[in-house]
Length: 128
Image (tube, rainbow, N blue to C red; front, side, top):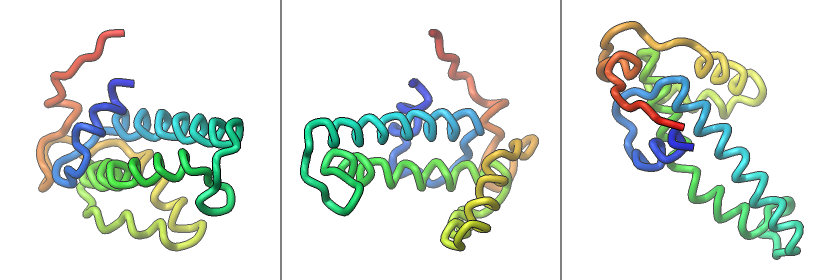
């Protein structure tokens, strides 16, 4: 859960690098929260904004949009790619698969044009 809050603290930070762990834990927790919002919308029969999205799920999606884009751009920076590669997801099916491949790749070793490797410079340890 701490990785989720790390991304939220960097809400609109598009500079720098994010490691795989930060990206995937944020994505996982974001998906759980989205599903929970959807279940609450359905259970409470809250009004829908668009077909399939209740008001709570739509509000959460709007809140999570910017940090999701920011962590995706930082993840691409971690592999020494420009953040503009995130737009490849607009290409149906193929674009999402290419972006998924990028998100699964390891970091560029050492420093790159976007900063130092977060694995090596990450002094943040989380206790459970």
